[in-house]
Image (cartoon, rainbow, N blue to C red; front, top):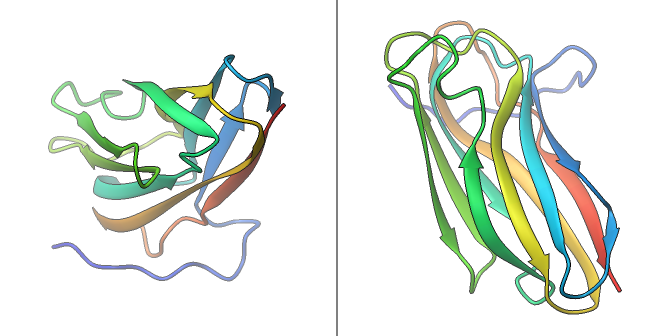
Length: 147
């Protein structure tokens, strides 16, 4: 059963998403890698995530599934649908045989810096189905400066 879940109040011990940038400042025309990690998301069997970015400043080039979708569940899959006009990436994680038991990378994304400016990247979990997970992980936000 899918349920929208509420963000937790105590950020020190709750689940969260983490965006990691290889570089926080790049020149126009250069590539930048962005990884989305999970932390303390245990027991998740199915989840939907959204990543947003400024499509005027960044252009999504590619996505590569991280370790979390398949670790311990060969049938696990992560699908990604991107909209370069709105700057949104919809991610759907499915682990039918075994829920998420460890932290790790959900997805690696490669962007190209296409115009000078500041682009905010924001990732959040929009729904989840699990056994031991009680609330939505804290969203993640990072900033990329393009010069």
